[in-house]
Length: 165
Image 1: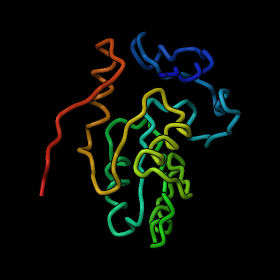
Image 2: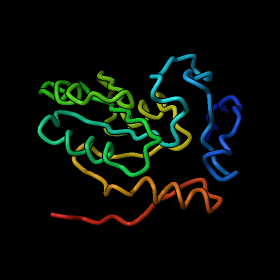
Image 3: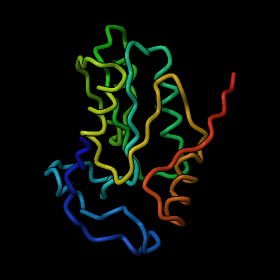
């Protein structure tokens, strides 16, 4: 059986910044849907929630995080779901002083699906993206995705993979 997720509360559109088809919503400095207060610097629900599941990736997760922080499109949050790392992954993540990063550590069975699903449940963005902790993005990835979403009626967006290295 497929069950649809619950609908998020309807909030006003931000037509002064995005074309009228935008899914980004203004809520001053508070997430009304969850009641969670966010940083005064982030005054809206992020357009993208970037979910990074990880386990014992202290040596490489920093590059993945940097590739998101260096995006030309800035309306995102990063949700890092650590599946019980025993290395210094948490210390590496904590070195990034950015209010858009949220870090959760726990032990979920069913890797890699369970950490991804847990990330989805914590996501606040209008769109969810996945980035594995050993990968990174070109700096215009989110901008290109945003432009495509704004110009087309889509429910899912996927694209080609370029393997470098």
